[in-house]
Amino acid sequence: MSAWLDHLVLACARHAIDRVDDGVVELFAGRQRLAAIAGRAKAHAGLCRHDPERERAVLERARRRAHRRGLESDSVVPVMQTLIAQAHRRQLAPAASLPFPEGIAMSIPDPSHAATRLLRWLPPPRYWRPLLSRIPASLHARVVPRVLGRAVSAPGVLRSLEAVEGRRIGIEVRDLGLRWVIELADGRLRAADGDAEATIRGSATDLLLLASRQEDADTLFFQRRLELTGDTELGLLLRNLLDRMPWEEVPLALRIALQRSSRLLQAARGAHARRH
Image 1 (cartoon, rainbow, N blue to C red):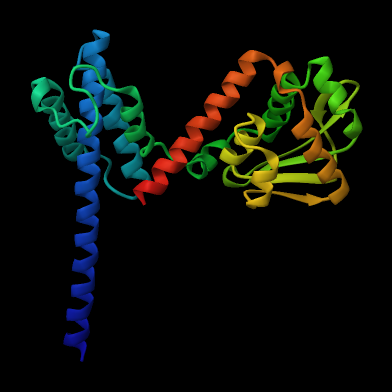
Image 2 (image 1 turned 180 degrees about the vertical axis):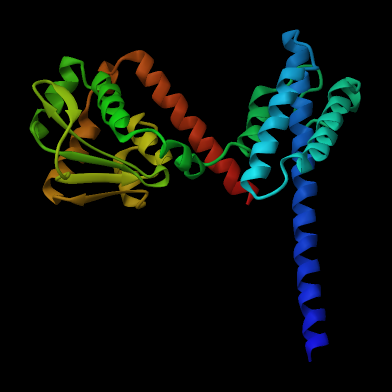
């Protein structure tokens, strides 16, 4: 019985190793495609394709990650050096032999197609959570009301929000693990003390889509991509005010930043969904 069990464990382990190996090959292929795109971008920008400083940074980053995973730091160096050498070969290959993703022009890369491929490798917002958790809460409390304050600084926008002055509104970004309580007082937004009376909760992507007017509030709430908790009456009032807020009075630079950020995250989410 013991021998049979050992053979079963060995077979399961080998099967799992095969799946890991498959993933390694897929990641290697993805790295090669990205190296080709980076090489073409360097060529068009007139930059040197060999970047020793960048390579040292890649090796050092691999050592740190290996150490965190309980590996000998230098054990990953030969692997990374092989990957770097393969990237050199890919970037120095003649243009006609570069296996660019289908649909990208061989003379000048099509930014839209290249961006779609690259977006698949952009970490979803939930992977940013550990990094953001290291930022002091006091800094969040200062920065977020200041940014939002710029959005509502125009007289027309302030007038549209007068009905919720002095009320504590919560904003919760689920996938980033962030939460703020703000209030409108004396004509400006500020961090509020105490619990929120009503909270808008959703993912970073969907909250940005709401803030940038890329999708309307009714759609987002109906599809349960956003939700309101707490004082229902206040939540519905806030929802209606957001719909009626004069978007054209929000500073142009902020509107552009919100729209581009929301489109980027939405495209990345779509790319990840197609990949999986």
